[in-house]
Image (tube, rainbow, N blue to C red; front, top):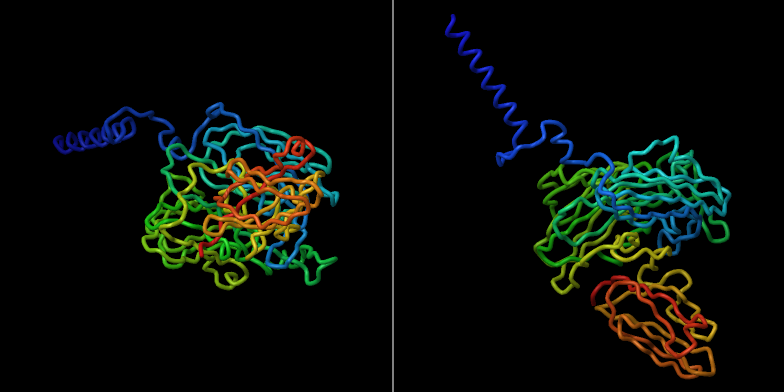
Length: 448
């Protein structure tokens, strides 16, 4: 009996030693803190790194196409639904300001799912014409929604007041990245002056007319996401809702890894479909070995046909992945380009509302001071008219472009350009100073 008691005590002591050793050392044998060891893996604590980033959003209502020929009165952050894709780093202090410029006399607010901050202080309604500022520390990595939280929250989100914020963890492996924001639209049956309004009863029923990625039905069929064979692809997928779950799936491919909410410490391997709940997100990593077209969808097929089909085009000839991505990303380019605060390019034409493919130049300025065109095989083309009886030109320094325009001349401009936003102007002395300048955004298009 005495020997049994000794062996039992020895075994208990050895077990305790193993447990203590496991807590106080890492697999490599190095000492580790006994407390909060696992917590530090998926988040940080305290005041962060001290790096401060300024994030400003403006609440404003406008009209945006949500499908081809379908104009809808959206409530937005920074003039688009979704709002800009915001990127910050883990540990950043976000110095945030919300300005309410509502033209409908609506109060608006902000709710950052990435933040830890008092709801009753920082997420309060902001009256039209007022501003609200506060700081918060990005302690959790991943992809999160931000949205308006003024009751009824359903109406504000369903009408377009949402966006994605990515908190980038350190040492994330390089990949070609895209941001996909899933959302629903619930328009009423009849337009007013050609514009549809949101229907609250339909929102409550959960029966949307459109379920879309990045604010426009089937946007990425005409503007596919591109990658090279076997290239690492990272998809930050956010479901803004407000109601439906998105069963995210890529047809013809499998996900090497899925990270719920985008946290790099929560990998799931070899996944076919992953449910992204309303108000949630996930980071999907994959590589596709063969050239071709690969549709991405919500696998909830009652809703797939309402606008939730896009394409990943795999082609060895596509341009290299960007070296970095903008802090304010354009949602309609899946976060690749700088946000412009304008709606999506018209499907098939690469032209935004108000741009018919022709730019008119006069000493009072260009009639299109900001417009989008779609590149085709690395080239763009559009028409430039000189409305004056004296000469002008159309100059883009970053692209080495200078198109001379004689008096009252019309020129078909065509030049090489990769996706991005560029400044154009008239280089004749005094003309730029008179207001002859603007920006052109080149959107990615399909090769032919």
